[in-house]
Image 1: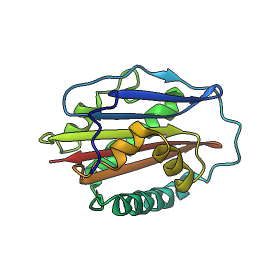
Image 2 (image 1 turned 90 degrees about the vertical axis):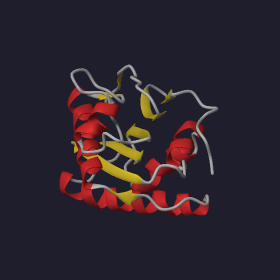
Image 3 (image 1 turned 120 degrees about the horizontal axis):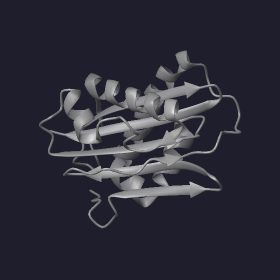
Image 4 (image 1 turned 60 degrees about the vertical axis):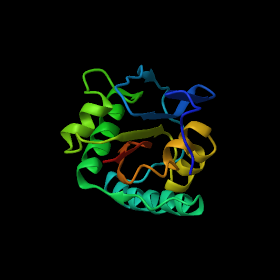
Length: 178
């Protein structure tokens, strides 16, 4: 089992001029500053109707990585799905990559509003840019803070939200342990 205790609470990874991902793992209140992002110049993203398929593929891929690391699979949680989807949409609307965009509640408050106010541990990974579940997961697993969140065996429930705006995809995974 991996622990995030040796990693900073919030880490931002920058590739060129485009921020591609941030990770957050917390057991107490935390906020992260919004990071504006440059416009995307990648291949066409799938239509918004296909984002549900990306979410299913991403959960399966994350669970394969967790199983390989000795963790139980994450179980999907409908309330967390709503929280993650709304957060991806909020990031896209403000063209900002952050765990809390201006005017949005904190991660802990979003999770509580989704029906998970009694969590003992929570985490989130977000990204802007990857065009497939495989590439999103590959980027997250290549980064120690993101890997620590996704492979934290103490986290058991997850909600995934992928939001498409034109050719750009915004990704959020919210994870909790009750």
